[in-house]
Length: 263
Picture 1 (cartoon, rainbow, N blue to C red):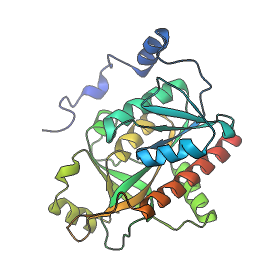
Picture 2: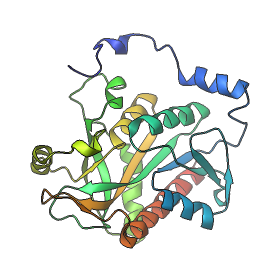
Picture 3: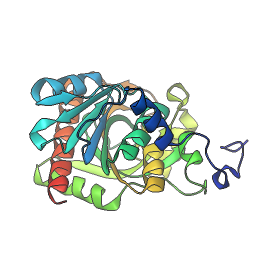
């Protein structure tokens, strides 16, 4: 059975819109008035968010996802969003809300499994497209054969900043799946042959929503575990994973701060 179950859904009006959601929760005081940033960094690892909020000057805004922090040294032009759960559905809802509030640019920063035999723990990967093996993107993009794509300009800016900062990176497609415990040998072999570099759980959905809504989205990952040899080699909690993730965050922050200054 294809996703979505109702193939003509894209011709029909949604019952709940981001505008209605934001208006309802603002009216009841759940979403406060605050200086809406131009750009947001999504992150998922608790240790990264803890480190950011410990060393950065931040102002927390309650009511916008699990944890939302304005970076005050950017004059609140950039914020960090975390604690939104793992996988596409939770962060997708937060993305829709932030777009409705007026955010224009996003960089997604996460960990990913390495599918190619050249991958090493701590490697930084800039995502160039996403194989859609999750559910959310099919409710946004009509053609199921089209991959989900990031913003070309923002992706280029991220790569240029990584180069300028001396951070080695690779680039390539990712495989986005909802089923962490159902990443099978057959799938990994297939995507290896297709040149897919990573596997993770959010990028395709974020790219699809950003494409439909007309905002910029880029995504970068740090290799935290390896699957290229068809056995799982996890280093999710390793220091090199954490350090690479923080360097990737710093590059994303620089990109968005510089981009915001240009507008």
